[in-house]
Amino acid sequence: MKSLSIIAALAILALLPSFASPASTEHYPSKPIRMIDPYAPGGSTEAQARVLAEKLNLAWGQPVVIDGRPGAGSAIGTQIVAKSTPDGYTLLFANAAFGTVPNLYKNPPFDPIKEFAPIIQVGTQPLMLVVHPSLPSTLRDLLTYAKANPGKLNFGSAGTGGASHLAMEYFKSMAAINIVHVPYKGSAPAAVAILAGEIQLATFSANSVMPHIRSGKLRALGVTTAKRSSLLPDVPTVAEAGVPGYEVVQWSGIVAPAATPKHILASLNQKLNEALASADARERLGRVGVEAAGGTQQAFAAFIASEVRKWRKVIQEAGIKQE
Image (tube, rainbow, N blue to C red; front, side, top):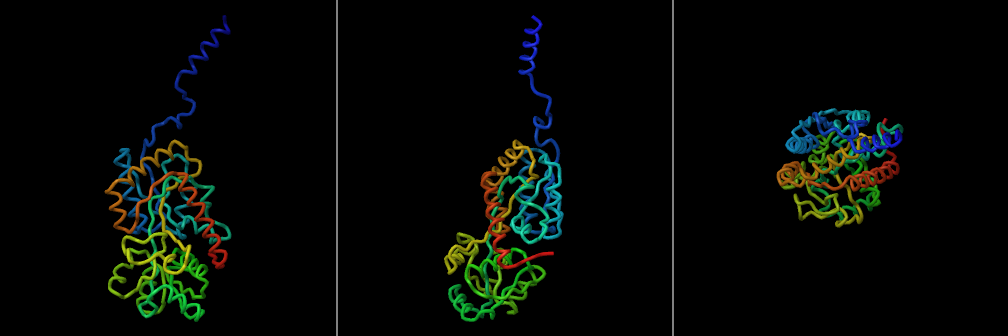
């Protein structure tokens, strides 16, 4: 009789809600969310992050605070998120450097695969391969000249190991040409240099060089993405114009610390997909040259892994290192 009472009691307990893991059943979010932007204020990442922060705030009624933590090529802000409590209340607004920075160092400042859980790809942005007007007018003619004159052409970048440098090292490798790298301390001085004819080639975000292309001060030879840009639909892709298979995407996305609970990651993915599907968000992202993406956590994880592999190979072959 006693054993029957125990069995009955256990059966009743099994039907009751579990209070053993309050964190797993706690409503999310129940407090403000911090989204780390690892770049200086006023840039593209901050503009994108603010669009999505506002959308999440409207959806959940909880503030999403953009916390700028620039430094060390995004490593400082990224490390803060990697070491934070994996509870969904500290997120990272990442971009293409997330897949390149670890490959530049002997002792990587973070591991994009092991230390983070991908949530969603926010958007993509093309780079534009531009030249000084004194150079050949098509990419094929430029490649012919470069192959006939190894080492005579140069290209500028916003700094060693940055997006504009790596895009051109990848271009050099795939086109099998020898052109000389001239690093600058940022995109602005690199732009001044190419406008003055001090350097001949460079890649810039499409949005930033549009006025110079339209005025004729620079010539666009190709867009680095797999498809043409709506900003300049008459400009072919680099792959179309003479380097088959070439593709470089400037991307953005949101990730969380690796051990963040799956139901929180799923909730974030759902709400962010809804935000990115809205006409308002797409229009506002478009103002900074970003095409909204969205999609599953799994697709974003696969994309990040492919980016890490791709840039590891490019960086190793070019012998690029940061101290």
